[in-house]
Image 1: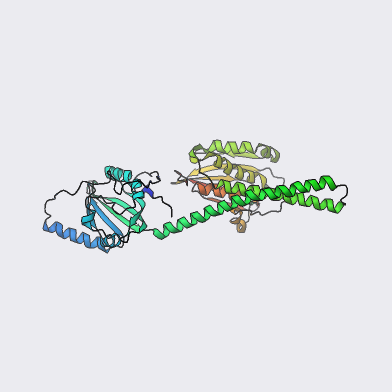
Image 2: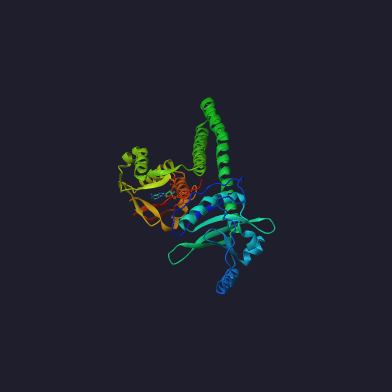
Length: 404
Ligand code: ADP
């Protein structure tokens, strides 16, 4: 299972960078430790009643609950917490609220907890909590301030929900994806060598024996060459596809207008040959891997110019609209369009809607686009009418959170 906790602010506040954790953290770090309980004045009868009512309330909630005073000192734990961890209130005192957290996860929480207490902000973290039998289970812990009328944090409540199965499921998917990618890479890489041999010996055969082969045999050799060349292209595209999904993204602030211009420049010959007119609306700065963004524009523009109506010059327009949480880009063309029943499958690997003689291609272009967009945590989709053109949309979140 992945050894990385995830951390973020929720409610008001800003996102926090996710940090990898080190195994060498102490069980409770100094910054998290609150001063050992001082001797408090004896509580009044009504405050005892209030405390009893609060205890009954938190005991009834089926999540692990720990509450703390403004100083971070634990003042209440609920029954589910006690029965899961085997740790009662007295043992929690003087330790801060993070006792039983996996040591590797503490380092992620440390600085955020200090900031939360300073600024009175809520936050959430995925962390492992130790059960009474010594095993750990992943929990989503949400920590929120308890505020007085002046919105001053007079205490804190932390609720932890078991997400162990969800984490295990996510991890198994991640692992399976990784293995598939490795497989595609190795398979496509290793397939190139025998293919080179086939084409090498075919050329030899053609050079040495072309005089002694009859017309039909020469035709067969031609077909074999053709097939090998096609296979070479497919393997290269597969290799390329698996490369797009591998390695770290280099996320920076990118001027999407300049990425789009670069893509267009790479397609200069095609624009000229198709007598196409391509225009760009104002495009925003986005957080993205620039190389992959250029590639995305290039594939979409290539298709917009390629799948044109006979005798109609392609007209392509690229625009971007903001929403609350993302930018939605659109590449709009006046080409042949796509029937509704085919609009989902064109994003899959090697899916094409036309014979090679009508339009060249291998059916990988949009699969690569989809991979790029999904790595940027965006979406890719199309709206289209046959004969009326297509709009390919993709979204990029603001700010973009991406996989390492
Ligand atoms: P290829 O690399 O062969 O062009 P893609 O994955 O890019 O394959 O596209 C898959 C299929 O989607 C194409 O075969 C084509 O039928 C259809 N398609 C893609 N873009 C457009 C477009 N702008 N207009 C019409 N059809 C398109």
